[in-house]
Length: 306
Image (cartoon, rainbow, N blue to C red):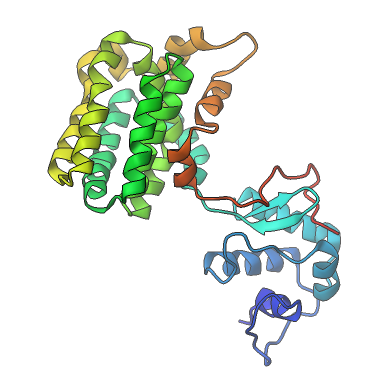
């Protein structure tokens, strides 16, 4: 099948290759636009940060209506493939390991997952992640882990503590150089933050758990994979010894009951989680990837540049 988008971008001077024999559809549908753009992005032919043609140019060369084009872009934005920036246009979006978190988070909550289930899964992922990071982490990444620990140890605010606690764990996942581990961990970030808040607001848990961060970091810095694996396993297993009955309650009930005192009037648990994951420092910013100067919030109607 011909690649309509590839030919369109060539015609607009955005690529150096084309297929002169392509049998281009005279009036591509919205679904064809979505499928072609999605294929070009997923295959890497449209790299992160690539700016799409202006709305006018796209519509004129493709023959698709601008209304259909806007709907196509909204679909791609909902799939986390493009970002639409006010006054600048549409850009291929930087992929993030947490992109899959929302649907999986909903599924896990509906499955009545407990802290025990989450800890078992995190040990499976993060013990291996720590061991791989001990083999593969670069000096700058180790520095980011150290910065996250330092920030965590110098704040008493539980939201900021959770922010830097997650920054530390995300940095390790990134340093594993295994995108499958990184994405799998990213999918359980919201639930993990809730569990971190449960631990950080309970001195009987935090006093035992937090010192393990330095042990994990030391093992990674000294290139000792098995020591890093063991330290991470023991760190996450603290909940088994200290959570009591909470360990086998649903994650949802633990979060709602135990964290409600942290919420300001009129705010929800989701607000608190968003705050914990917003601007969490260099470790998470490196993990998420540089988004570039073009990144911003989408316009309400999803329009591209004219």
